Amino acid sequence: MSDRTTTDGADVTDVTDVTDEAGTDGAGAGTAGLPVSGRQAVLRHGGYEAAVAGVGASLRVLRHEGRDLVRPFEADELRPVFSGALLAPWPNRVVDGRWTSEDGVEHQLALSEPDRGHALHGLLGWVEWTLAAADGSSATFVAETAPSDGYPYRVAVEATFELADDGLTTTVAATNVGAGRAPWGTGPHPYLVAGEGRVDDWTLRLPADRYLEVTDDRLAPLEVRDVTAREGFDFREPRRVGDLFVDHAFTGLVPDAGGATVVELTAPDGRGVRMTSGPELPWVQVHTADRPEPGLDRTGLAVEPMTCPPDALNSGTDLVVLDPGASHVSSWTIAAI
Image (cartoon, rainbow, N blue to C red):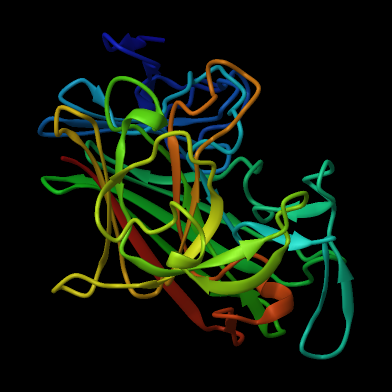
């Protein structure tokens, strides 16, 4: 392999450097000999570079002029805490992993968050996605949900990552290729990095009027409240995060003149990172990444635009339901400030 390491973080490996036992390069190659995080697609445009890993279609690296915009991880590292993963066919939690479909059938999902007893972040986060296409500045990964007792639907998902002057845009297209009506939700899980320091040092602007209150122990949804109802949760005007703990979904998003939600995270020197999402993503989960591991603890701010809130398979709130043959498209962009 001809790995290249930038000055301040994880390795970047070109997709054509990943080879299976038969010597087949690039898209469509087998899995033998791949890094732990899967086949790597490397994108470059202007001052931007990105690396997307096949396991979970995870955004592994995003930099602008050598500065990290997301918390990176190594190609041969087991992805830490869903860093950069694409969440589908639901984002966030399904409480107790149980939900009832519109035909009255109760389903039980595997409890992938055992300490809280929930089904977390969908079914495709640990799947090796297929790299369907790649060039110098864009790549497309595809995967499909396999019908199961917990989610008896077949949904084909296509995720395209494209670098341009305005940053990295991810577009997710989901198509119901099965027979039944399939509930659907998605969103990304990047840990944004504003610059030097930690989450405590950075300033957040989040144009949200409301947030979803959750239980302290299991983060199970309770009710939607005004952001002024909880101290420190009003980020409609930029304010420093400080030592505030956040692991909540925000809504009532106020769009800019172009109809997009713009979240900004900046360091004391004024540089930072911007995340822009469309109206098809009316929720944003924010998490201050409070972790026991020193290298992960509050070293990036999770900002996750979502098509629906936590436990939407039960509440039905903003849940997309795909008829057979129907599709849903969502997109978001991460850019340097």
